[in-house]
Amino acid sequence: MSFPLDCLFCSFASGEKSVDLVGQNGSAVAFRDINPQAPLHVLVIPREHYADVATLAGAEPQVLADLVTLAQEVALDQGDGDYRLVFNSGPTAGQSVYHVHGHVLGGKRLGWTPA
Image 1: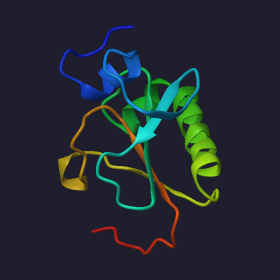
Image 2: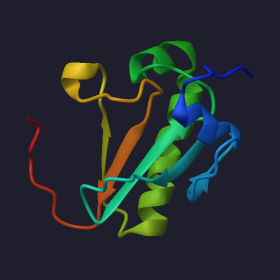
Image 3: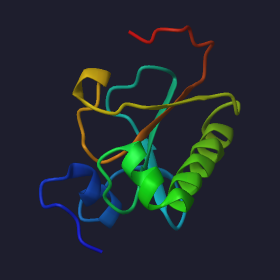
């Protein structure tokens, strides 16, 4: 498996850089967001590099399913099981790291703030 040299999340997925994992499976890893927006704010990423969720879904739908399963496991293990899973795709949608990642948010009643 090859990783882009400049992708921070690839370095987490490969183990090159350490990160505090809160969950993992064969296809994905989960770790706490460094700028949490809710009491539970964990990122779930595939072990392989894909720029965004649509690219991942088209190339490896089972990996996307594994990522969603990991998100649910983290929400059950780290919170009360209720969660929101958000994927930002593109810079105007708020994506700042171009390695697909889902934000698992929970731990409180979440309002609706899409913008």
